[in-house]
Each structure stands twice: as C-alpha cells, then as structure tokens.
Image 1 (cartoon, helix red, strand yellow):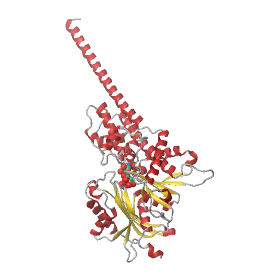
Image 2 (cartoon, rainbow, N blue to C red):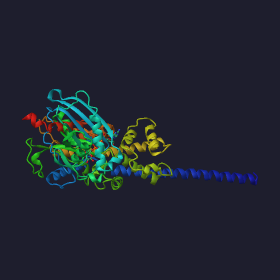
Image 3 (cartoon, rainbow, N blue to C red):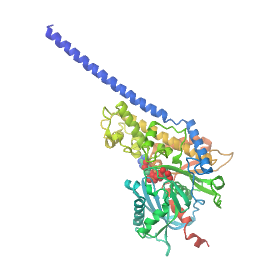
Image 4 (tube, protein in one colour):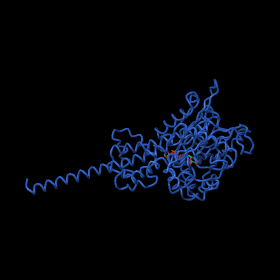
Length: 498
Ligand SMILES: Nc1ncnc2c1ncn2[C@@H]1O[C@H](COP(=O)(O)OP(=O)(O)O)[C@@H](O)[C@H]1O
Ligand SMILES: O=P(O)(O)OC[C@H]1O[C@@H](O)[C@H](O)[C@@H](O)[C@@H]1O
C-alpha cells in the first residue's frame, strides 16, 4: 500500500479513535453527571426520611409542646391561643349572617340564611377572589379597604331571601387566617404575619378595628360579631354537621390546627371558667419545631430567604405555599452540580416560588406513559425543553419525596393532638368516635398527599384505634363556621333570649 494510503489510513484511524474517545468521555462525563444527580436525590431522600419511629417522636413532641403552650404564655413555640369560643354551634342558629375568610391566597365572602335545627342552612351564596399580591406587602389600610370594598360589592348583590330583619344591622363572622391574640370573641390583635403577607403597620393592631374603619369609610352597615381563625371556623362548621368533630386541621397555603380543650386543662387561662367547661384552642402549629423534624439544607435555605426567617418551620416543610419551592431548590442543585438539565443552569430554576405546589401535584399525578405533563410543566414554567423520560421520572420521584414527607409529618401532628386528647387509645368496649375536620387546598386537591397522610395516620393509630378515628373533608367549613359563630354571638341574641 503506498505511503499516502497508509498515511490516510493512520489519520482515519486516529480520527476514529479520537471520536470514540470523545464519545466515551462524553458518556463517562454524562454518566458521571447522572451519578452525581442521583447522589443528590438519594441524599435528599435520606435526609427527608420519615420512618414510623421518627413520626412517633414528632407526635410525642407535638403533645409535649401543647402542654407547654397551655401552661404559660411563651411556654412553647406553639402559641396555643385562647379563641374565646367556648360554645360550638348547636344547630339552632337562625337568621342571615355574613362571613369573610381572609386566607393566605384567597379571600372568600359568604352569606348564609340559617333556619334553625329543622331547616339548618336554608340558603347560601359565596364569592372568592385571589388576593392581589401587592396588598400582601403594602399597608393595613390598603388591605382592609380592599376587603371592605369586596364585601360591599357582595352585599349589593343581595337577592330574595337574603334580607336582614327590619331594623337590624348585618352581622359578620370574620375568619382571619393569621395568628391573633384574641381579647374577646370579636376582637384581637395581630401577633405576626405568616405565609406571603408582611404588612408592618398592621402588626399588634386590632384586626376588627382595622376592618371596621374601612367598612365605615364606605358607609357599609356591617358589624363583626365573631373574629375567628380559619381552624376555629372549620371546627365550628364541622361540628355543625357532626357532633363527633373534636379538632380541625388546615392544609392550604399555610397549615394550622385547632381542637376542643377542657377549660380546666389550661393553666395559663385565668378568666372565668366557661359554663360549657370547654375552650377551643388555636394551636398555630405551623410554628412547631422539634429536633426530630427531618430538616434538610433546602429547608434551611428556604427559611433563610423567606419573609419570616426562623418562624413557621413546620409550616415550611408541609404546607402548600412551600412544597413546590422545595422541589425547585433540589432541581436547582442538581442542575448546578450535575448539569442535570445540560451545561447551562436554566435561569428560571433560580426564581423562588416559580414552581407552585399545584404544578408540582400535576407532575406528581402524571399518568401518561411519556410523562408529557411533566415535560410541558418543565417547558412552560422553567423553560426547560427536550427532557428525556428518564429525567422526567426523576422529577416525579422528587415530587413524591417532598409530598410524602409533608403528608407523613401532617399525620404525626394530628396524632400528637389526638394523644393530647387521650383519643389515641380506646378503652375496652368503648364506642366513642372522634372526627378531625380537614380543609385547605393542599388537602383538597393533592390526592397523593391526602392518601399518604390518611394511610400514615392509620399506621400510627393501629387498626383497632383507627376504627374510632375519622378524617373528614369540611369543604369551606371555615366560612360557614364563622357565620355560625357570628350567629351564636349576635347582638340580637340576648333580646330574643330574654
Ligand atoms: N391542585 C392543587 N394541588 C396541590 N396544591 C394545591 C392545588 N390547588 C391549590 N393548592 C394549594 O392550596 C392553597 C390554597 O389553599 P386554600 O385553602 O384554597 O386557600 P387559602 O390558603 O388562601 O385559605 C394554594 O396556596 C396551594 O398551595
Ligand atoms: O388557610 P390558610 O391560608 O392556608 O391558613 C392556614 C394557617 O396559616 C398559618 O400561616 C397561620 O398562622 C394560621 O393562622 C392559619 O390557620
């Protein structure tokens, strides 16, 4: 063979070897990247673990903190707030009442015509609006003016069967889904903001006073006769339909729980003991913290960058405002350290809260063979295109880890409350039923979360006790509950009774 031919052959051979080496190097590199990405995922899964033994420790810690919070003010991260609700709805409530429900994302207005024991809820109408994000971090006046104006528009749509009795003021139950230091059933000062709210000049103000100022400014004749947390409203709404309801839990934008405590089991309460012998407690359990909580570097970073660093740790690992962002943070680390989405880290992946929990649950619930929902969410929200099925499966696995940890910890929290109530055991031959009313958009819409939470609670209780405990969805119980509590504290009640 001539020299030229040999030379060409050598050059070709070298080129082939170089190409092969490149492919091998690329494969090794990508397999190295893949291994690194999987290592990040596995480490996160390990650190997020909630084995049953840990859940029992979390439940016990919740019970201990409940006792501490009832013993003295500041005795625990759990504020265990006195609600001044010492009588839950009886079913006898009658008349037209309004309710406002200011949540972490939505604002609901409701009017309800109550017909007493026989007729119960004769008629109800409601409206729901999203809270403009700018009002969450503006001024108190701007927020309460918005609320008053929305309420006034709703009152203007009053139709047949919804008119207050002649000469009577319209009365309102105000559900306020933030920690409030109640000074009576219809007054209380804001302790702090949570979730996405941060309105400096509202802190320590009486929220009923703030609303009343805005209502009077527009000449709306409406009186707040009950100020309640949404967990209290949900408990009241739940009890209206089922006498076995003893606690309520909200898993929505934020999270919280309330339950019926025996009045003599509240050492810090120095007021008159209520005739009923009961007092509903707003636990504010979102602020629960324990060394047994499986916190990760991603939780620490989310907390540090939040509006309320150091606060609401339990809420930040189990509630709807945050779950999607935890998923985003892990994906971001996989992109930065393992080039999971290619050599360039997708810029949108660095934007806090860009991945919302509803999008996370849509990906988690994707049953298509090619995970096309996952693909389109990654593309539409994070501008990440051309993801392989293998990558999409990793994203689903990550959603499952985050949702499962949240669900199992929620169940542990409920177990802690049941333990405080002595309902985590059943005496021989006892038939007593205990119902926990659940509400909130996370619980209502995230099926994988809900089923995991309910199965975990059964696992914690054991088959025998689980027979006596049920979790019931009390849809918008807080609105109806607030209206019912407004009815039972109506200014006209005494007149009727005397
Ligand atoms: N499809 C969904 N999947 C998972 N979470 C959802 C879904 N829809 C809503 N959520 C969660 O529920 C929250 C809204 O809860 P909701 O109780 O309706 O309102 P609020 O928290 O304002 O009282 C949202 O912030 C979101 O985190
Ligand atoms: O209904 P939401 O907005 O999810 O609120 C749930 C809880 O969110 C917490 O952040 C508040 O401190 C609680 O008071 C509230 O009950």
